[in-house]
Image (cartoon, rainbow, N blue to C red; front, side):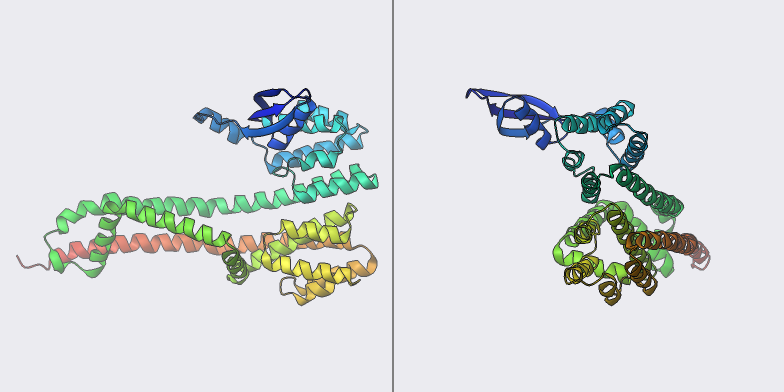
Length: 405
């Protein structure tokens, strides 16, 4: 919940001001109108400071994808059991442990009781419920099969979340290895190597080249670490800003398809997300043109967006979706063939889900293969760096015996 300050007029023409709590600005306006006020100005109330405890509480209580997945599954169970929608929302709002989720469900329940449809109520929270979620609910309401739609959505979210969790779990070890190895190198360069600097300071040019390089890197890291930090941070934000621009985004999108091995993983992910989202939407009764437009907005790829645009144009002319996908270099032949079979048999939604399941398996296999190569590569890289440090120091020590005294 957020606090908003407002200025408004009453029905009698008087002026009122104060604060009101709501999930977002739009709901704050609705609440003021329910009180009979006509808002003139509404702003988020500024806080003087945010205590660390409040920040930690916010991070712990914010609504996450897993919370929405659990809510969708529980809602589907209650509706299948015969609970009316309002009663199901009331039960779930009481059961919610997170304050943010509890407040969110109470706001949705309040809107539903106020005469809003369930999909319209969800659309008030675009940061929590994406467009395809809202459109699926809207189709379920229009077709009279809301329970089936919510069950489909629960399965969709569960599969997506399971795949994300597997990938996150798989990259933990390489990430920890990189952080620990990098920290070990930094400690060696900033604390251990400088201890030998005083020993070698009088040797001058007689030092071996590897030792000179090592001492130069160590001194630079110790004395100019802030310049290095500013350079790396500035470079990171500059690159991030460029990628967010139109030209940078298009270039980065093309590069992601061409990176060795990672490009294959990115292509498989795009195909899987397209197929699962499209199949779920079609199975929930969303018209194919609307489904394509929704999917286009959920995929963060300009190249895939262009492909979907050509697919929509083909559908408008009475053609299927398999031919435009075949002409693109994103979808492999097996996926296009399965889509063709789905169109011919009238089971396109089921075939798309099967494609998604197949490519989810491919993604897991590709991730395992990448990690099987990445882990020994990281270990080898750290071994080479540390080995260079040790050899450079030993060469300097051995060179002392060769000096004339």
